[in-house]
Length: 316
Image (cartoon, rainbow, N blue to C red):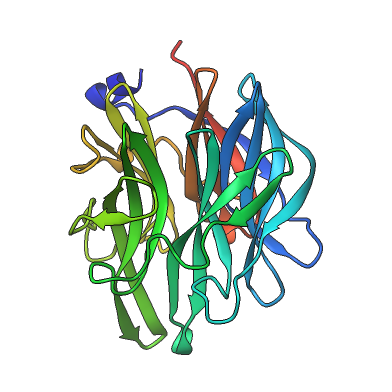
């Protein structure tokens, strides 16, 4: 079905299931960057990010069940990862981006945030170990596993992963430039690719995976990659266009994960006429369970309204 849609140029038929989590944790706002990992049977663990009163991001975990095209959150969310020590790469916030299961271990890759003067910032990639029984996370290292270096002078925020044999692939956002405008410093960043033998030490490929569409587009948010039937499928947030300043969700595909064919018309999901995701749609996370494909995503205000769920409808 998925490969056929590429060949016939038919948009993917995402069916929105509505708002899954509305921010309601005392002392925190937002519910951004949701991601999920299968534990057993129909049980999943969700990670998502909330901001405290100082706008510092913290990561919370939730148990959930997924069945028959629906997801149900269970119990109450638990704070599991907090900002690092002063001066560390994640001292001003930690953001959940992607779960990875490998050799009977579960990892959460997260983005560590560090504020700079004049409204600038750095966001590099850390890794934590997930304890599925105790619903807890432990940072594996105090520093980033992918961060600023000779290839990534501004930042390196990895959000999508795939393991083929002994080769780990990641698609990450790397900063391109900061531009001074009348409104302040304006960022430009895009999707890059790197490989690793252990998920910790990475070799980065030069250049953007997906070029900017035109002079108006300047940022890609959180690519999510799903590998199926020999094809890499990527959904990603992007902004902006001449008419639209806020995020939308685009789409690209690849046979090798390196060269990508972008076709946003196939994305199959857009803002709603009204409600929590009527102004913006962003930060997609794709996962599969029992033959169904799901998308967690954010709406208005970069997750200020919480996160929702969509399911890919089957062909009639």
